[in-house]
Structure formats: structure tokens, C-alpha cells
Image (cartoon, rainbow, N blue to C red; front, side, top):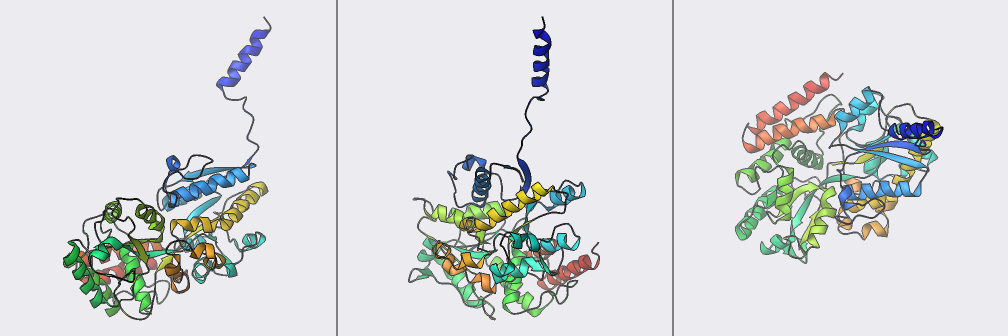
Length: 439
């Protein structure tokens, strides 16, 4: 009879899950974007599909860290792009992650409000110093006397090219795509391409698009050495240079030299299925498009190239660039949690070259200079961007919101919803009004 109390206690314990031993590992809460692809990356194994994709690479890297550090448990929270509404709510609720991915253009917003930790001192403890970064990464992440995160890459918009269609159009010479050197030459080549292939020269995401329009404008304004922000509270867009740039994209739209009415998913699908010659998209798609180019029977098979934006308005090469960084939100951590988080930071820095297989450019100069990086497909053509690429000044806040406003007004000007002059004036007014009323 005395066994019944013991059995009852065991049953109660199991029902309440109270007999489990506490996990002795230190938990690090990681928050990231880049999507969920566990089906492509079985736990403990390398990717079995799309090995050059952002999601597949970062999932495998974090798995590898846990395998190599069995005393640390990573609680990974994958959020929808860009993830800042959720992060701000978590910070307000005192429930911030330990380490989070953040676009460098967003870092000033969180830094100005003291919501992320300065990381210069802790990075030095891990042997990471700003002189190791590329010029582009250093300008973006090291300001106001400190370093505000671990730079993880540099990205920009590129010309992704269907070489099979370019050959059909007669726009290949010595195995390389023939690209324009002026706005007029671009229009001539685009018309020739369409006449010979029956397809538009450009594939563009133009619906619900809150980024690419602005990035295109920034790139060519920077090439002409235009000052986009004369001070942190004012943008300058109502200029002849900006009108000429938007005017070019409007003419491309008016002449039907680009796809229309496609959002990002539709435009990406259109390009991989042979819907046009040049897709204006970012570095992050290089790995995915290279994978398409390796598949017999696919429209990009043995026919994919990628190049920096060509010079169209003079002034020399230029690219609007940004990048991802890992930042540490302000929160209460035990010494063990801090040490574990920094161990992960050191691991991510050491494996940044693996991350660049997605197509991103490295933010570490030693990786850029390495034979392993340069021998990856296309990298020799693109690595120079890390020397001349520019972001917006780091003392300009709300860069993501500014990008959305500028893109909305540019879309209105390009599609004819507004005259170009009015669209640029409205963009300038709306951005300046927002910056004048920052909380």
C-alpha cells in the first residue's frame, strides 16, 4: 500500500513536467531576418537545397555554433523583414533579444535613442577592430566615437543579366555583356534588345516597392557628387540632376522597355523564367541565381552574369550601399549571458566569409583580399564596390522611412501619377517635415 503515494507523486510530476532537470546551458536569444528554411537545412546537416541562399547559410551557421559550443543554447527567433516594429515592441517591454540583425541604415535610429550598446570595447576584446573593416563598412558602423555593431556584409543593387537573351540581342562581346555608358546609350540598347528578343530590357519590382526606386536615385546622385543631405534634418531632391534620373526611368517605363505591374516576388519569378534581360536587384540574389544557372533546361542555364550599375550620368562609378550588422540591444544580462553572446559574435565574425556565399560583399578587408573570396563567381567584378560605395550619412535618422517616402514619390513620377517636378518636391517636403518633427 505504501507504493501508491510514490506512484501518485510520479504521475503528478510527469503531468506537471516538473521532473525535468533544468537546462544547464546558457541561453542566448538571437533574432534575425532572412526567412525560415528548416526544410532545406536539416538540423546538424549542411543545406540540401539552395545552398547559396541567405536563409540556408545563416541557419546552418547558427546550427554549427551550437554544435561547437554545447554549453550554449541559441533561442532563435526568425521575424518577417525588416523586423523593427517587433524589435521596438520587445525593447519597450524589456524583452529584447541578446543579439539581433539590423540594417546599418537603421543603426542610427537605435543608437540615437540609446537602445543598443556601443560595442567597440567588447569587439576589441574579441580581437575585432574597425581597421579590419572595409571602408564602406567602417563608415556605416563606426561613428560618434564608437562601433555600434559587428558588420556582417555590404550589399547593393546590381545588374543581374540573362546572358542567353543578351546573346540573342547581340549584346555580348568577348563573353561579357555589353553595357551602356550613358543614358542615351541605355535607351538605344534597350530598344535594340526588345526588337531582337521581343522582351523588355529591364525586369523591375514596381508594385508595393518601398526601396529600389530610392536606391536607384541615390546611386546616380552620388555618382554625380550631389549632396543628398546638406544637413541631418534636410534632404535635397528638387534638383536638375534628380529630375534627369527620374526622367530616364520614366522614359523606360513609357516606352515599355521594362516589365510593369510586378511586385518583388513576381519580378524575381519573371527574371528566372526568362522574362527580361536585366533585373535590378541586390547582391543577396547572386547565390540563388547561380543555382538557377546550374540547372539544365532552365532559362538562366549557363547564362547568368552580374555587374555593378553602369555609369550613366558621368562622375565616375558609384553605388548606394548598405549592409547587415549584428547589434546588442540594451538589456540586463548575466556575465555568463554576455560572455556567451560575445562568443557567438566572435564566431559570426570568423565565419563572415561563409555568409558572403549568398552574394553579399564582405565587410572585412582580409576576406575581400583573400583568394577564396575572389575566386567565388562574379566577385572580382564586384569587390571594387567596397571602396567606392556610399551610404547616407550616419547622422541621418529614419533612413528606412525616408527610403519609403522617396520610393513612393518616385513611383508616382515614373508611372505618370504625378509630374516629375511635383513628385520630387513632394518627396523633399515630406522627408523634411518628418525630420523636423523627430521625437
